[in-house]
Length: 173
Image (cartoon, rainbow, N blue to C red; front, side, top):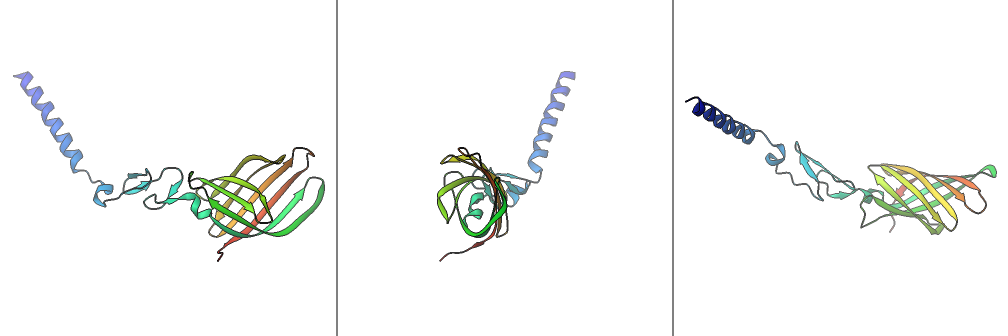
């Protein structure tokens, strides 16, 4: 008799537990939320995989960086304390294979194309060597305003420079 009571109690607890879980509110199911690009719905909101953003993880994060930027370029060389200022245009485009990667170059020096990693509004330019010059830096995008700081070092002459770009997106036709 005691054994039947224990089994009955366990059975009732199991059924009650199952009923409780099935009665809990699930905001993702209630709102019929579908997350794209391997995003996962949690408490009614999509948690996006690295490289995507938006309410449904529908937007590749690098696309918001893709544009032309009208920039003011200031460069300070290690062997010359006087800054060099100039206007420039940066063209930045989204990498279609890697959603957190952008490529960019200066219109004035289109032979040098750099690669950057984006996360939210931040840009990281990992170390890259092009024609004996090492490049690395960082930046950020705030609305339509892009700021980048790039450090260069000529591996042959050891001359370094600090380049600062500050500018705004513009549309081309």
